[in-house]
Image (tube, rainbow, N blue to C red; front, top):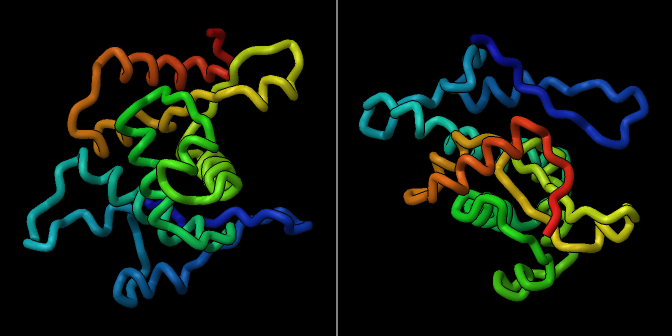
Length: 178
C-alpha cells in the first residue's frame, strides 16, 4: 500500500492538502517513504507484531502531524489523553476534572480533545438534549476512533467496553442518554 503523507491545513482559503514529501524523506533516511509501516521493525531488527503498528502510527500523528497544524505546546499531554481514552473507552469527559488531575489548564484540555477529534483519533458522543448548546455543555463520552488503537494501547480492557466502542464507531453515534 502506498500512502502519501498529507497534512490538512485549517484557515487556508484554497483548502488544499499539503504534502510534505521532503519532510518524510528526511524521516526515512533520504529515501521516499512508500508505506506508513516503514518503521515496522523493533530496535533489535525483529518485525513488529501487527498490534504494535497502531501505537507507532498514533505516536507519529501526535508528535509530527498535529504539531504542524495546531499550536501544541505539550505533545506529551496528547499522548496522555489518548492513553486515558484507551484505558477507559466511553469515559465521561469533564474538562475541569481532567485538568485538575493532570495539572493543566481546562482550556488546554478542551482544545487538545478538539485537536484529537479533528485528527480523527477520537470520537465524542454528546449527552442528548433538544437544545444543542445544552448538549455541548453537558458531559461527553469519548472513544478512540478505532478499536485497534484501544487494543494496542491498553494491556487489560473489559470486552464489554470494547464492544460498546465498536458499536459507537460502526453506528456513528452522536448522542447518548443517561
